[in-house]
Amino acid sequence: MKLIISDEALQWFKREMEIAQGKSIRFYARYGGSSPFHEAFSLGMTQDEPHDIGVETVKEGIHFYVEKDDLWFFNEHNLHVKIDEKMDELKYDYIKD
Image 1 (cartoon, rainbow, N blue to C red):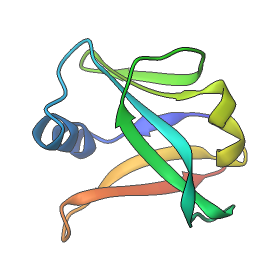
Image 2: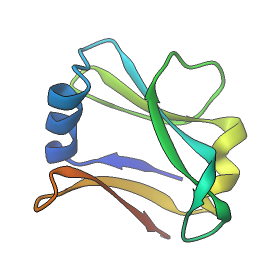
Image 3: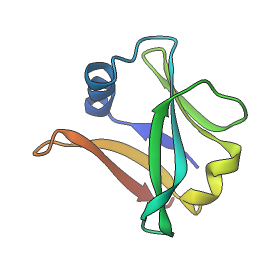
C-alpha cells in the first residue's frame, strides 16, 4: 500500500489544520459511515503521534501515516489524498496497483 498526498492536499493540511514540519497526520478506520470496501466504516484523519506505522509518506517534513492495525481498511489499495476544488475539502481515492 502507498499513501500519496497531492500538493494541494498538503496546502489544505497546512491551512486548515495548521500542521507544521515535524508533526504527523494519521489516517485510520473509524466506525460509522461507509467506504468503497466496508459498510459501517469510513476513513478518519487526525493529528497524532505514530505508534506502529504500517505505511508512511513524508512531504515537506510532515508525516502522513496509517498504523499497521488499520491497513485492513484499504483492501490492498493505495490511498490518494487530493482536494475537491469546488468544495475545498479533502477527497480520497482508493486505487489498486
